[in-house]
Image (cartoon, rainbow, N blue to C red):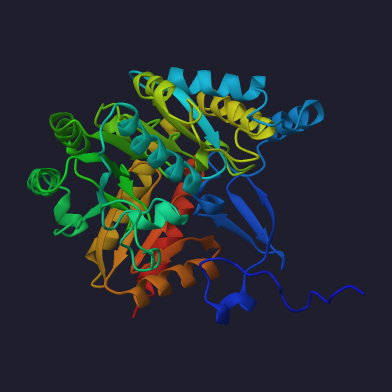
Length: 422
């Protein structure tokens, strides 16, 4: 006997139990538009789960998935390799700067964080050191698996369990608006310098180039370059979490490209497969991988998943890289992002708006309180635009394929929603 589906049995993550039944049900998506079960079309201001980099239903991605699925869906990554994954690893090595050549493929950004931390801590053991301390932003977000949660001090992701190694969280003492100055960069770097100097030698510093769930905080120009110098001075690995920012989202291929630096380890996901199929990548320098010949048990990386480096996912990612290049989506992200930010800057004069900030196709409207941000998102939704809000910040991150007309439409709908605030 089959169960009735009139009452949803789906337990949706990050959603209060009392709100489970009132979910918007999406049934179709095309380009920058999505349609609900009632037949209403919306402009997608959040790219699905911030990952539909090439828009929804791109034919070249569907074709790549279909052809690969007919040929080989996947095979045990411990037993054998396959061409889609090999090609993707080579293409990432070409895209990434410096000696970032060696890639491990997993399924999600959270898994990528776990892999990056395991690699970083094992690296120190491989070279005969016992470094374990990790430094990160208190307001950072690096996933919801065990180690990822340990890195975050955000109230909705902070872990209730004891960390397996020392973690120091750096709190930002300035507002996001005040942070975007030369003085803000200097003060922030001073906090990281102090944290690096106080305590045992740090194994790694791990940060996002732009703090996503931590409030869409745009870090000051030159901060990452300064952090790279600090890590070099202390012999500490620099891990950059590009899960949200990577593959054109900030108007450059990677968020760290704005400061022209090379991390030791980079974690990538979301835009890498445009939301079509789960995939993440962790790329490290050849020097780090080389030390794993000294790993005492397997002489290699003791981390992996059944579907890590999935052949279909890898084929889609290769198609994504092709679409990004052919359709100049990184350039479009920079152009449309600047147009969007310029159009929304006028909202800063509203008494209930404290800041409007952005980088590429990541734009945030910070309201005076969570209720105001919620009202903006709700009004925009009724007017045909879906955006997200967290802790007083409305976050906008449409597909990189967004057109000029759609950008202007988005600005108009958000401006109307803010104008209706009491």
